[in-house]
Every structure is written in structure tokens, then in C-alpha cells.
Image (cartoon, rainbow, N blue to C red; front, side, top):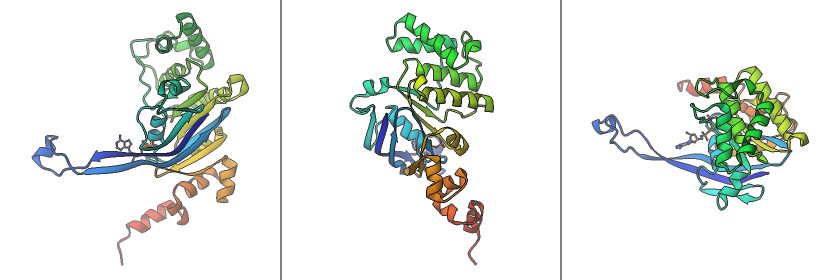
Length: 282
Ligand SMILES: Nc1ncnc2c1ncn2[C@@H]1O[C@H](COP(=O)(O)OP(=O)(O)OP(=O)(O)O)[C@@H](O)[C@H]1O
């Protein structure tokens, strides 16, 4: 069970400092700029359910999942995994999660099996158990053909499978995936969908699964509930049917646009809204 409450995160960045010699030499400091990456996110993901965090580019999904993974702290808000606070008891909380981030970061000189076993050993798993887990995960993720190949030269799908096996090696109750189908073809995407459905089921361990995406068809097909994120805020939560009913739409894509881009949704089409804004004043 994963619970994010009123998360907030800003970043300080430096803007351009003009075309001075100092800036071209990288010495100009530029003006400080505050970017609000996550303004207010609430998300409740129960066990045995797949929860989708759906938002357009730049909505704040990756920043939110990075905070959940303990990579940095929020400015405000709470993060709990199975009731354990990620900020005050990070080791315990992280031990209950399998995280597939946006960068898969495999060791290229190790085989897929070695990558998985090495990760298990880092978590103090006995060698025999680590080897058995690698075998079981190879079966689950259909990666027998690549198990004893070095990771260098792996395709995007092969890298994803290996990274997912590594994330699942300690059989975590909670699984967090940031845009897991990025770069995958239709067959690999379908296979991943089947694996996630299995992991959510009683036979697969009733896992709590959270995954982010900006592809609404993917979320529509897979998720038991959806949190729609826009401009750093969670703007709606519900099942796909619930969100369709809430917006009075028949198509999930239309419901998503209504919820995530309310300004564009009021115009006849998002494109006409853009065109109108760019018209010179009469
Ligand atoms: N380290 C950082 N420093 C400054 N700004 C950042 C940083 N990380 C994220 N941002 C900004 O925060 C906002 C949210 O970014 P984030 O990557 O969380 O969005 P996202 O929903 O994952 O987008 P996408 O679907 O494009 O990956 C963006 O405007 C981004 O530029």
C-alpha cells in the first residue's frame, strides 16, 4: 500500500545570463528561478490494484516517483509505504518496494542473470536463494534467451526486462514503475501488461502496483484506478468508468483532456485554442 499526501516540491534553477563572454565560458550565474515541479499530489494505491499516475509531459510524475523512491525529500507532504514513512525510515520503506526508474542503469559487462543476482546479494540475499530468484524471474518475464548474455547491446525491451527482474528480486509487496513501456514495441508492451496483471492477482502476490504514463490507452487498458496529474497537481482520481462519468465523455482520451487541460477542453479543439492565441490583435 502506497500513500502520498499533499506532496510539494520546487527546484531552484539558474536562467540564462545573456550572451556575455562569462556566460559563454559557463561562468555567468543567471537569475535564480523557482520551478514548481509538484504542487499538491495525493495518491492512495491499495494492494492488489494497479494505480496509474497519468499526466502530460512535465506534469510532475517522475519527480513524484523519485520522491517515493527516496531519491530526494519533498518540501512538504507525507510518503508512506505499508504505513512506513519513507522520510524517517527509508531503509525499511525502500525494502518494501521494487522500483523501475526511467534510467535502467544495468552493468553492461554482467549478464542479465549476474545483474539480477548481484542486486539480490546487495540486499543480503543468500547466493542459492538469489540464483533461484533469477531463475523464477527469467520464467515469469520470458527472458531465458538473454539470461546468460552480457547486458551490453541489449535492446530496449531486453534492458527493461532485466531491470524489472532486478527490481522484483526481493519479491517486494509494492512495485513502482516510471513510464515502463517507453520505447517498447507492441509485443513487449503486451507481455509487460500480462506480467503486471499477474503480479496484481492473488496468484501473483496481490502486489500494489503504481505506474506512471502519459499514454492514456495504456492506462485505460491496465489500471484499476487512475490519478490524473496536471501542472503538478492531482486533479482527479477514480476508475476509468468513474472518470468518464465525471466528465460526461464516452472516450477516455476526451475525459483526460477535459481533466488535464481544462482550458483547451472548453475550446472546440485544442488546436483551434492554440491558433486563436497566436492570432495578432485586430
Ligand atoms: N532537477 C530539476 N531541476 C529543475 N527542474 C526540474 C527538475 N526535475 C524536474 N523539473 C521540472 O519539474 C517539472 C516536472 O517534471 P517531471 O519530470 O516530474 O514531469 P513528468 O510528468 O515526469 O514529465 P514527462 O512525462 O515529460 O517525463 C518540469 O517542468 C521539469 O522541467
